[in-house]
Image (cartoon, rainbow, N blue to C red; front, side, top):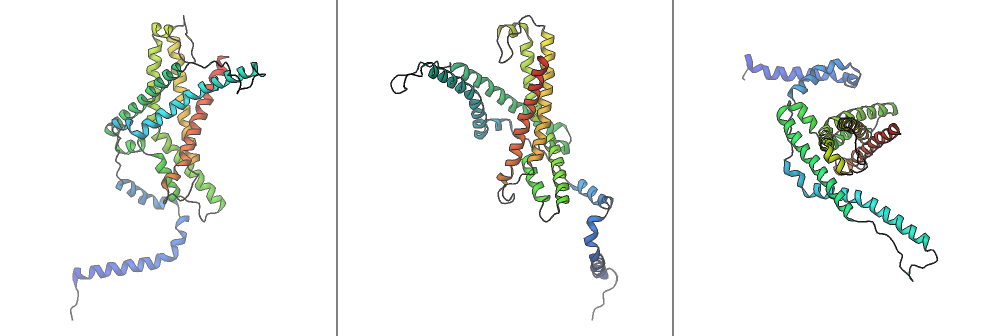
Length: 312
């Protein structure tokens, strides 16, 4: 018979002590959520210290991916085609009113077809601007991942759609009371709003930069007076500095408001869950995508309305 002495007793003693500790703490497990948050502070700090952050920006050529190209070109083409079709429909209705006694089968209508060349020109300018914004965003992402600290860089480059899915799985509503559901929902909206505000910042900053470059180019009197810019008029005789200050102010205001409203839209949209996020991750992104689009549109519309009211 062999008797363990010295250090040979340590594993058995540790195992017995751990089993005894678990047995004594088992009745207290239901009370853990009621303990003050300071009890878990050390554990949270340790998790933060052990967590590693890595920011991997996408390459510059990712701007020309097939899906990105199709999305940009399709969105801009539809955006310029709809006004052209509305104008054509208005001309058609006007022609029909003037020739009510005629039948379409018997005689053709004399309809004025709007010129399509300006539509193609506007489509090319908008598409070039969108690709410039995406290209500059990739440059900002590369700079952020190499200049700022890894933790901040990872937050700036985070995919907030995937983050919303993870929060749906982590902070679910199943089995919770109504009051607790409201608390969890409020926490999720707040967390996702901050996440979207950080991760969408570089994209809106890129758009603001491109808009500002266009404003600087249009500030040159010879360029500004020789062209009739979309929705701006010729501004003949206007002071270049006033033009620059006016449009720079509204550029910064509009982009900033859109960023905030789009982030709030993402936070609210994160509460919308279609299907099971673990089984169908793509469907879990619908809420944040729609929320971002609605918030972005609402923010831009709000600033445009405010600008028109101030100009009157």
